Image 1: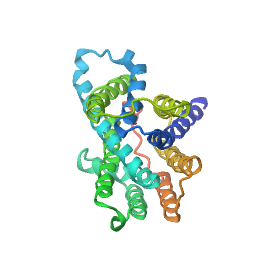
Image 2 (image 1 turned 135 degrees about the vertical axis):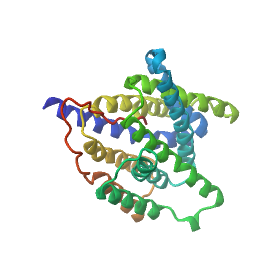
Image 3 (image 1 turned 30 degrees about the horizontal axis):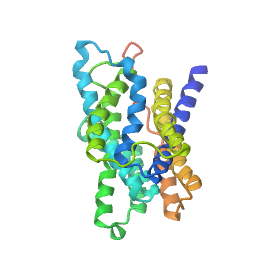
Image 4 (image 1 turned 45 degrees about the horizontal axis):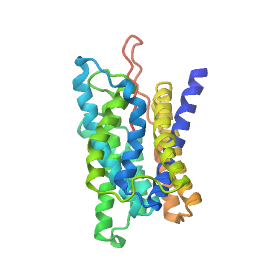
Length: 300
């Protein structure tokens, strides 16, 4: 009973931590730091903590290469997401990120040949409706339209990770997956950060340093660790419900602490996404206890 309570609690704490990403990112943007540098800092500091988990048997190098590719793709996707946070209204970028349930369903059907339930289709429909409420193409410039399209990369890559890690091809330790995926982030982000010729490499003032440390550890490394531990002891449908906390924290923290106004449509879209994440999916048919149970985990 204790583990059943501890798992969801850790997932909830992780969701709260992840929800502070947009807040810390925008504080660093306000100091003049570029999206390339901010994205790099988000992953390079946690990578230092994960270096001890890089040693991997030769037999698992194929899985390592897959995690490197996923990390590389996610690095580009997070960079596009941070660019959107810099230019688009924060509520719009945050809600676009939470279209991942729709992409998870689509990728699961088209690539992984998974079946879907009526409840899953309903969840995806609500997510699309929510996104349509905050995206008005007629009011976007050409540059903003490209940023919106790029912002959709983040939920697409995240959805692919969820689907792949639900049943990976080889067994690799969770911390090992995190370590190699983070290396994949750095492979693409370090050259892009150098190529961008950033004027500011370090924060200006104590507030900037607090935001940088908060982004790297409070909103990245620590919640990822809590999620990995908690997800093993928590049912997937409970994880989806608790994950809605991240959206609420992200939107409300930016609204309250950065004085960013939320419109009626923003609030309506946020509630629709929460409802979509809280819709319970039918439990799978019970399997014999002797069969291996695969626990779904994901990398942020």
